[in-house]
Amino acid sequence: MTSTESLIDRRQMAYIAAQASDARVNVELETEGMTLNIGPQHPATHGTLRIIARLDGEQVVWAEPSCGYMHRGYEKLTEVRTYPQVTALINRIDWLGSFANEVPFILAAEKLMEIEAPPRAQHIRTILFELSRIANVSLFLGDLGVQLGAVTPVFMAFRDREYVLNLIEAATGGRFHPNFDRIGGLKDDLPAGFVDETRVVMKKLRNFCDEIENLLFGNEIFQSRTRGIGVIPKDVALQYGLSGANLRASGVDWDLRRDQSLPMAWNKADWKVWTHPDGDSFARCWIRLQEVRESTRIVDQLLDSIPSGPVMAKVPRIIKVPEGEAWVSTENPLGEMGYYVVSKGDLGPFRTKIRSASFNNISVVPWVLKGVYVPDIITILASLYFILGDIDR
Amino acid sequence: MPKLPGLVKGLGVTLNTLVRTTTKGSNTIQYPHEKEAPPIRARGVIALREDNCTSCMLCARSCPDWCIYIEGHKELAPPRRAGGKPRQVNKLDRFDIDYALCMYCGICVEVCPFDALFWSPEYEYSEPHIADLLHDKNKLGEWMETVPEAPALEAGAEKKGKK
Image 1: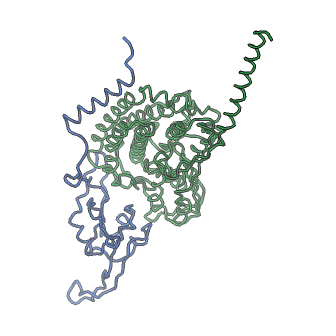
Image 2 (image 1 turned 180 degrees about the vertical axis):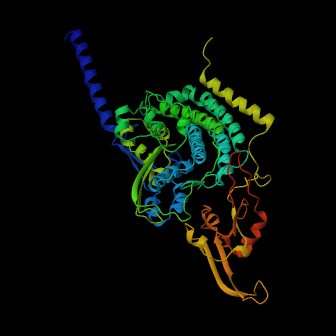
């Protein structure tokens, strides 16, 4: 045997040995796959949403959200309540932007009764609607940092959200549950000093947006954790029925405030619908940041042009809505929220179908979680931004 | 000029806030020691003016979670003018609001046709026992002292008659 042959032999032997050891390691370390159960009680799910994720190592191969832990049966409850009582209930659906929940229901009832709120009421409604959007989304901007491990933004968000909640409380009497919207108008007019106070607060909130942009959105760690994570392409977003900022972040130019002609005052202000072509987590966060800015602009412009007059149209004291069916949806802080009200001429609705934005927004979770790494689950869930009450109703 | 790293920029925001809170004071209110005055319209607790109540049951019926309990009886009161017939008045035996159930929607205050119910911004009435949250008519009457005047309205508003 020559030395070359033995060398080749040795090489071959080494190769075979490496192959064998690799195979053994593969057999020994073969992961069987693990089911990771996130929730129903988990700090990152802000509420009681359960995500069941099948993992292969660090990667998710299959994931499914399981909702319904907080089902309160609003659709059924509306059948045994009168119209004024329904408004008291439904502002608990999305508890962060509660005034916005009342508006589509009231608009649907007004559509059935063929009345329209006076222009002053429409203006004040729009202002309060946008204030609740700011209160809702500014919490998201702070909460987002917490979910990614940055604790500072949440304190700033709670500080500045407090000003908005104080405004809502001064006008309506309730911080979280205004119950201020009535069929035909509003319960009461604005208290004196509200307009000046709101202008000051809007300035503070624009400042807050700049702070968050510098603090969080410019941060390299934040960017590397959100850019390219959880990309939802345009067609998928449309297929899953996403709405609101999640849809706009996928590049779809769609905003019910602009596209619909409702008896509200959005068309009297000059504002912009922001879209982002990327569709990743960063885009969704960025769109919401811009939305807060646009909302402060809308509020500022509407404050300048509040018409004078009554805030309540002439409606009977005991409200009976005539027979018929109506569907009204508005662009709520979380997305499209609509009410399909069927009336049989009684004191309360015969049937109500509530289309809340979060339920459709989390329906994309099984699609978007496929193939992501475990830490990114939280990023994606946070950037999709759902309120549990809004999912389960 | 090289672009400032985002991390440094973020730290600048934190530093700004630190300087602001140490020099100008923070927004935190140390609750039991100092209190924030709630706005006039704040829905804290419902006060009852017993004389105005005719026990018509409108509030109890329109309450979404049925937390108002009313019992009453009819009584003959002396006539207003001399020589007239005795009047029939409704006397209130029981008027309870269960604040353990109440969801502070304000529908009862709104439907009351005789101005017997009012909102007060008072909020410190938590109890160690849930049964103590049932306020009877004496306790509800005591809240009347804390009811503020309705606030002035913003310019351009049309003044309404009541509330």
